[in-house]
Image (cartoon, rainbow, N blue to C red; front, side, top):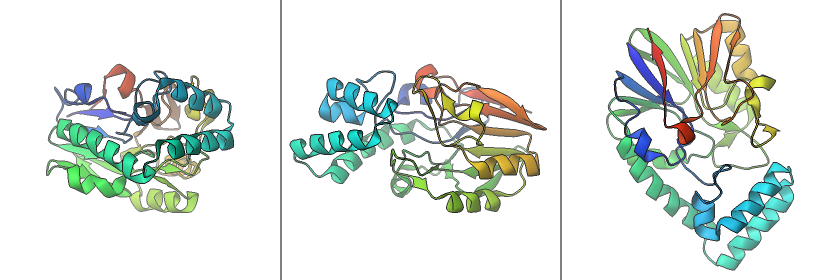
Amino acid sequence: MRLHVVSDVHGNARDLARAGDGADALVCLGDLVLFLDYRDHSRGIFPDLFGTENAHRIVALRTARRFEEARVFGAALWAELGVDRAAAIEQAVRRQYAELFAAFPTPTYATYGNVDMPALWPEYAAPGTTVLDGQRVEIGGLVFGFVGGGLRTPMRTPYEISDEEYAAKVEAVGEVDVLCSHIPPEVPELVYDTVARRFERGSRALLDAVRRTRPRYALFGHVHQPLAARMRIGATECVNVGHFASTGRPYALQW
């Protein structure tokens, strides 16, 4: 059995269309949407609306952790644009989703990232795409558990939830062979982004589940340029697969 796993697609529909080649199934761990590329500030919904120079500015503010200034700056841009913010973002996300979901092969198993909009997924997911969040599925004789979304941060991305709600989803998944999530377990080496120069939010509940249930693998993304791309926690191989937007290469899991 060969499975290809991707996360943090961020608008890369071209490579997504080939991500399942040679595999029995594709797993996607979320963040299909590209709102703002921290490596190339000309790409994404934000620069499309406000231009690259304004994207440079807001990335600089966020990287410096000046989140309140970034919010004020962004609000001023929206006010100057004079359109309904929620409607404009949803329209842009819909355009991306139409292209990205059409690129999924059959079968695909997917969960949400923190920048995704779960309410829209039923409109775009084809019958060959199974969406899971706080749920389990058997693939090739192994049990996979899926936990989507992210934890609350000053970034206020669309699908951030409380630690308690997230922990409940981890608990609902229970003991599995492969634990799939968008965000990593809360380990410093796994949550630090070397380009954004900050610690992203990882999940203590995921870390506790890895130590307690000892899955074969814990697969995740969210941190695009991690200090450590993989490490072992006890019996579990933890692997960051969140490089798809820049590399276009899936992670291959075989058994």
